[in-house]
Image 1 (tube, one colour):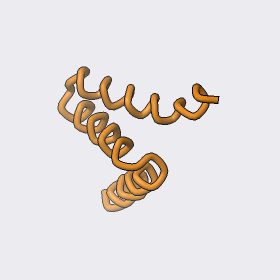
Image 2 (cartoon, one colour):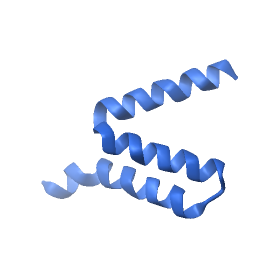
Image 3 (spheres, one colour):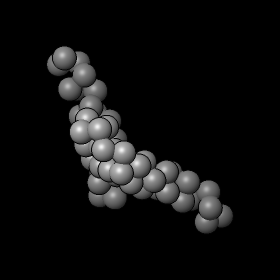
Amino acid sequence: MPALTVLAAVLEQSVQWKYGTAGTIGLLLLTVGIRSRRPTLSSAGAVILALLVTGPALNS
C-alpha cells in the first residue's frame, strides 16, 4: 500500500504543476466520486480534467 500512496501523491503533484488548482479539483472530484460510488462527482471531475487537457487543442 505505501507504493500506491506514493504513486497517488506523485500523480496529484504532477496534475497540480501542469493544470493548477482546477486540475487538482478535477482530480479530487474524480477520486472522491469513484471511492464513494457517486457517478455525478466522478463525471464532474472527469469533465473538468478533459476540458483542461483538450483546452489548448480547441483554442488553436
